[in-house]
View 1 (cartoon, rainbow, N blue to C red):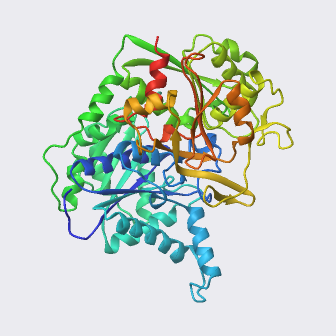
View 2 (view 1 turned 90 degrees about the horizontal axis):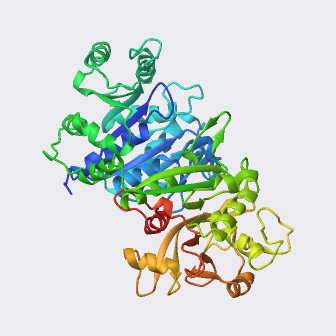
View 3 (view 1 turned 60 degrees about the vertical axis):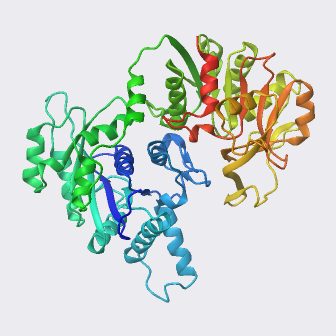
Length: 555
């Protein structure tokens, strides 16, 4: 790595015109490009929500909360940071307005402001700056890339405190501001219109921030005339106005920005020199494969309930899972077709809807709604011998389905949905700080990375062995990220094992069931994991469980 003087450089990435404009991918791409130049980079995401984390937000509202190794339930963009940078992120890389207010109020209650009148400015702003600088100091990063949540000028105006922090830091620190904006191409005109972007930039400058670089998102590449208009009105060099039109893969964005010299221009602004050439070949190899038509194919059904909002349908609720499936399909040189099945709305037709699929996944979920449809899907996968992967709730429901339909425990259930049930295969456990994190009154969860000991001569062992994915091979330990509230009930271990369920992974102290499966003689691929391998997968390193699951589904 290059060694800079002790001063950290800060890059603030803001967004205008609309949400989901691409700030996160832009921030991740800039971070990646700087890392490829040999610099150390620490990404930080600032969110406007009053939620303390994203674990309590319905995924339909804000997409799949990204589960970090240290137990943070974060915004979906932190997944892009990990997948792009191939480095772990967590609590140090994420803040919400809820966290900030909570900290400031706790400080006030503890008399840490010595009787001052506590207000958003300066006290919340000071806490924002403290956290950004703490992230810089602890990571010893050459660059901290800060993604400012929300849209400049939005109605709530919560994010104004983040912008105020950026303005203040620019007075004493080495700072660059990158503004990501949107230029629509109205169909009835057929011409890019810059006025919405101008309004957003005007709002940005009214907050004391003048963008050094503008990244223009649009349906079409930004032409020289539009760049000229921005440069003329804003007194920004045209070369600093970057086109980022819609691409067919987010993994093409770093190379696209690099082709317009954004990374070199940023380094030049800071008075630094980068490498003449950087290596983006691993991303290019992946995106090249995305265009190929392979000789092999697979059709994977994701059976969940977070697929719609109002009259719109969306897949961001399972974003990390979908990315992991795609990574593994490309690794296996396989054409992928995804089939999204709403286990709630399609419960009565689920057997017909599953016809023709070659693999079935039941992912994370909460609550009773849609469970009957998921259990039907598991029954279909087990009896029709279709490769099955159960993730978290998908593992728990697989255990319940087996108990009901193989072990003849007809009232088998989970305490989550039937607290007074007699045969609770999945239940809650008393709080133990060794295992769980308190989320709120009466609510505890197992969050973050936990070790698992793998049983010999099992499907999961063959997968880990094949890909040398051990954390400690001599002790037969792997590690996965966890995010759940209820656990496999140990009282039913012997009962279900005698009927053919294989408990193939447990916690090192043998207290938690981590993996279940069926013998290969009974089923070609039937695996449930309490952990979340989808949050560990990257384009360059797909998770072994997904690689082998996809391989089992290929036709």
